[in-house]
Image (cartoon, rainbow, N blue to C red; front, top):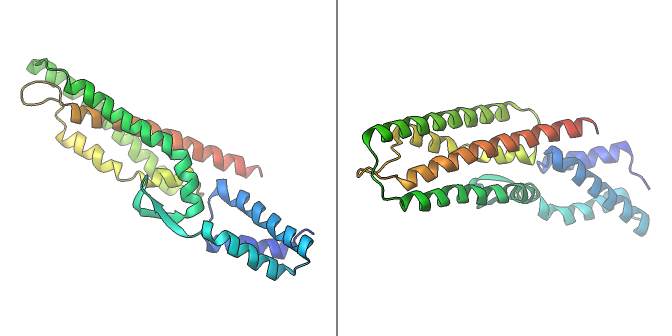
Length: 218
């Protein structure tokens, strides 16, 4: 038995109440719930209301509000959203850590003392790249905030808002050398992690736009 349009609208309203309004999840979850309800009606001869109530009880645990270590406790969403966002973000999270720690280790091992001219040149170039990365991250955050459609990719971008403080710290106080003229591995590591973050912001926004176009055709 197929559900009527009115019954499907009730399922859609249930998902809106549970805040499962992310493009790359909403249609998929809607199809699963409709299928579950139809199967109960067909196999157990249950009325729609009873079948729908049983399916809601089954799915409610996926919709409880939660957070994740990867995004910080201040960013909450239904568990099903967090789980998919983690799956999409986990690789980039570890890549960002690698982008920080490998340069940190390499540059901290360099004991060469550089001249004042080289330090000024390196600082200027690095701060210019930090500025470009900062402006690009702010741009991505801005257009993501204005986007009327949501996806798990736009959620990931939103959770990276605090990275702007790292940008400002590096730009305003960024000296990439220690007092003795050797490289400051900590600052350089943070800078390179920031460059990777700018790339990741671009990647996730591109995936968000692709998701919008994909579900426009459905």
